[in-house]
Length: 373
Image 1 (cartoon, rainbow, N blue to C red):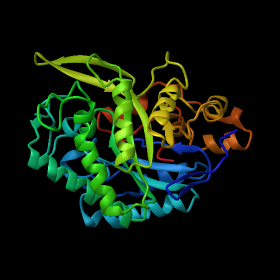
Image 2: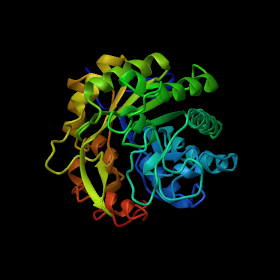
Image 3: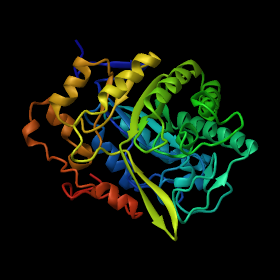
Image 4: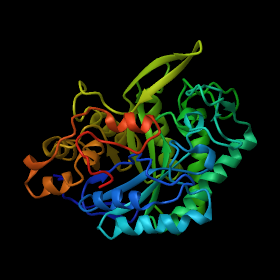
């Protein structure tokens, strides 16, 4: 019977326990994608007890940042800072993985040929004009992901996670809502996965068979016309065949449409609302594991020991990720393991963290006034 304290192996990468810090956007980087002392403190503090740390979405190009001060791996000059970050995590005993991403039409305004890159011109931001990527631009983007993954390995990260969720660029290709192409990059779930598979295969070729590659995908998209679980199961099998070692299973938990200047824009979030049940995503992650035959990471209000323990004991889920709760109290996992759960400063799900990031500010928290620590 599995417990939270069990070790996990992912293609030779040892996790000392089954708890992960998921990629949490902090906006603590520098304007040129550089590592800062603040971001070091944030991750170092939260690496002390977890088995795995997945560093937040790190841009593969300067025109693909999620927030103004996203980390970057688009330039060799960013390697030393990222090496410092990876080392600070590993010194605390956690495995260090970095998520690489391009935000596509969800990017912040910047200069660059791929600002607003999309498969089919779907807009998410009134300040970003979407562009429909040409085949040559797709080829270039694949090369950019490979370059970022190579820099991550050179910086000493134990693995990379390719971001294919939350309606960022790869997710936009995977979703039938945002991908209406009629070439080989569109069509059914298999066709829409072509870009993602090209990224995975070329990263695998570059880094070799022994380097851990994770992939984050949406199990479902709770918006009309979005990706279904059946789509995700098809994609997960293809990703396994392409060389992915583990799947980080997220979702679009809630969405709404907003109107700006007479145009409709989709506002989507991966965060479960207050009314949604803790652990609601575990069954989705378990279904993905059964389909793909790979280790899976589950997310979604798993910061209570009984909920997290039940996920690994009663289902085939391999790792549980604790996100917002670790912003509120970075000692959450240590308190769980030492029998001091009653002392945890609880996240009250106020969404201050999302709101501050949404305004382009560093992440804030109503409970934790000491951020970035």
